[in-house]
Amino acid sequence: FTKRKLDDEALEELEELLITADLGVATAARVTKHLAKTRFGQDVTSDEIKATLAEEITRILGPVARPLAIDPARKPHVVLVVGVNGSGKTTTIGKMAKTYKDAGLNVTLAAGDTFRAAAVEQLKVWGERTNCPVIARETGADAAGLAYDAVEQSRARGDDLLFIDTAGRLQNKADLMAELAKLVRSIKKVDETAPHDVLLVLDATVGQNAHSQVEIFKDMVAVSGLVLTKLDGTARGGVLVALAEKFGLPVHAIGVGEKVEDLRPFEADAFARSLVGME
Amino acid sequence: MFESLSSRLGKVFEKLTGRGALSEADVTEALREVRVALLEADVALSVVKEFIGRVKARAVGQEVIKSVTPGQMVVKIVHDELIATLGTKGTELNLSAVPPVVILMVGLQGSGKTTTSAKIALKLKKEKKKVLLASLDVYRPAAQQQLQILAGQAEVGSLPIVMGEMPVAISRRAVDVGRKEGYDVVILDTAGRLHIDQELMAEVAAVRDATQPTETLLVTDAMTGQDAVTLAREFNEKVGVTGIVLTRIDGDARGGAALSMRAITGRPIKFLGAGEKLDALEVFHPDRIAGRILGM
Ligand SMILES: Nc1nc2c(ncn2[C@@H]2O[C@H](COP(=O)(O)OP(=O)(O)OP(=O)(O)O)[C@@H](O)[C@H]2O)c(=O)[nH]1
Ligand SMILES: Nc1nc2c(ncn2[C@@H]2O[C@H](COP(=O)(O)OP(=O)(O)OP(=O)(O)O)[C@@H](O)[C@H]2O)c(=O)[nH]1
Ligand SMILES: [K+]
Ligand SMILES: [Mg+2]
Ligand SMILES: [Mg+2]
Image 1 (cartoon, rainbow over the protein chains, first blue to last red):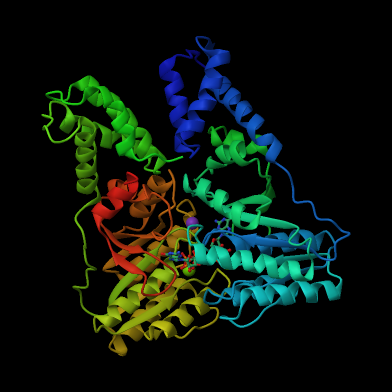
Image 2: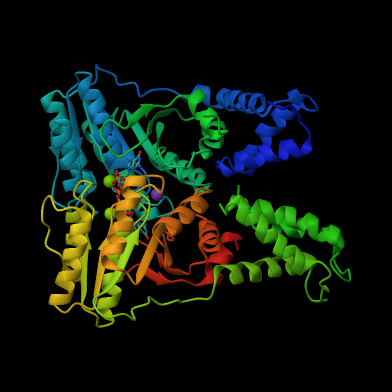
């Protein structure tokens, strides 16, 4: 490998590499600056540089790489899944159901998207695929009421884990966000400690709007963790680095396809390496 | 976090009010702010660079008229150039072909294809066209059912679902039914796919070859980040796109992807999706999107 001096021009190229991975201008500049502090003017290969960049990003992401912790004492541990339209909520529930079912837990799904056409049917297919019962009402029913029933039924059955799907909603829609808050209040009427986790599902193709998504969903329904989907495409989801710095929310898992087995733990190092274009 | 371009440039030019012509140095400094503003709005980097080059050429040497500040001047040049790049408003659907005219909907997973298919069907129905909706999505759970329900809501035709039938065969049957039953337009909704999924991209190309669509619309989420260039280029090269639909414009995303995709494909943005309901389809207005990208 040919060595090259880490000068301003080289740094600019690196900053641009990070920008094209959606880190955002400010975060890309900060990460590159950090690199400049330690290596400026040195002769380095491009592999060395990428490795150092990846290390710095891993340092930021390491603390948020935390799997979902299901408490077996709760019967059920209630996981509410939220996010903007089409981000991958329903599919992620299907994949997670499989993971925990395979681990020997009793898992139930609740079809809390009573709005979108065939959303209930979609979750029912995931229920069949994973052998998990699905609690549902007809489309158009009150989602908060459904959620209440679901927690009650799941508790009566002594389930270990209950996933509640919700309709996709854009975070700037105050009425829809208020509905989600109402759904949470209605869950709490059955179990005031629930939901025990609130997962915000983000699509890896998203750009800087992810900031607003996390901020508002977090305010409205106390998001406890993130899942990043669609990482099997060419989008690298770099906005996660900025989100980790700003909010420190755990990233529990990533989606890498549409099939039931396409869920992976979030690994800071692998993610960082892919962001900077290593392997 | 986002500061509108006007206020950014206001700061840059604070000391310069009332000068004669914009010098190269003034412009260069201002364009640094423009670059940041566009990147924060998710315009793809390669598109930003090219765009900045054009703005610079237009801005250097411009006489600053008395009534405006140099900052306002640059904002206007950027705004005008954005509108020019985004293209003229209201490019209607091309329906000039022997009926049934085929519209093929393509895009990444979850971008809004199925919903947009039904929205376009409703719009055409209101224009007195007889429309048939057909789902070629045999992969996503309940996808065909979703479109069937939406067709019912829009009160347009819906191709009966035949379990086990594959996409190319469905598309042929759709055109066939369209011809026999006197439909004006057949809209083919496809499964979401990644542009790097060779098998599925070949499948949609085969559908195109079998049905000869007059319009192939690439449906993309307004929240899309830097990946917009890659997906637009790949879909355009592998399937051939005639127009773009930008969905979820009812959100608070700045929508820079619109500029990226337009610049990369050269194809017009035909519609904006502005909600989940079937009447939430708008014709494209470049000035609206330009203002949005600039945070104005
Ligand atoms: N390639 C890929 N596709 C995914 C992934 N996760 C979900 N999808 C696809 O994305 C599309 C949307 O997924 P859903 O699970 O329906 O998304 P949602 O958030 O429930 O959508 P709404 O309920 O309509 O808001 C579907 O076509 C899924 O198959 C992933 O990790 N990779
Ligand atoms: N707010 C808003 N939501 C939209 C818009 N267009 C579609 N949606 C929602 O986005 C989600 C996904 O829409 P679909 O039409 O199912 O997307 P798709 O591209 O067909 O998804 P796949 O078939 O899984 O690839 C649904 O929740 C829709 O209601 C829009 O313009 N605004
Ligand atoms: K999306
Ligand atoms: Mg869903
Ligand atoms: Mg669809």
